[in-house]
Length: 344
Image (cartoon, rainbow, N blue to C red; front, side, top):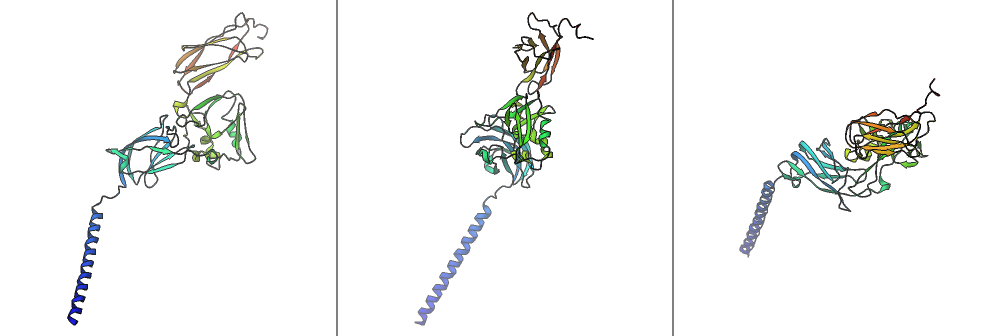
């Protein structure tokens, strides 16, 4: 009986030893398998980064999305904006550690994508397509300002000046900007301290306004940010300068005025020599307007109304520096042929 007991104990000990050995072998096999697996890449050398951004709901391209490539320490390595086909391109990005790509917009929820091997389609070139969801209107930045911001705003909105208003993106991928000639302007604050602008009798959102600034059209709240406690523009994710693709051909406009009465002249013929569709006849307000799509030197020619008592004024030279986004106000005064009664 003792002999059988020893036999069973030896058998159990041997079985335990075998189980321990098996576990040890399995552990080392698992460990060696882990060692053999490639590490997740955290360092990248990127030459270019491109892709397409579309609306998640409509599957349409989105214009004006800001695209930033950031390294692990949040340093921005490159920035671009999507075009009207939703495409973006950033060149010569460089070395990145734990990189991420951030997509931001005034109209869409921010999206951040961590860069990985699947985004690299060929040697050091990144391709990435993303979908973005719209922000409800009640979740967008509001405008709360204090101090003399309304008087500062008026310096950019004055009668006969021009600005662009970035239209609401009702159809994804079809951003447009409206060029507006100012005839009437007022700037006030609501009881909450919100900046309230009225242009030509219509209330507008200052955050969507771009005014002439050093040959470009800059967002007005970007210009005024130094006077504001709340950095509204920084939160908006809107471009600082309006894309040239959204600018309309350069505008030449003005009014024909009687030199004595200061009243508008009806029926005057106005031409710009050097462009097609170059004839206008003034109405009761005496106004005229032309679009000049190419830079160059032109001549504004005014012919007094038929059988009127006005002299024909000399042609006026117009120097157009840019075919898009420019504007030239050029009022013309007509003098009576018999001027002795007012020349003293």
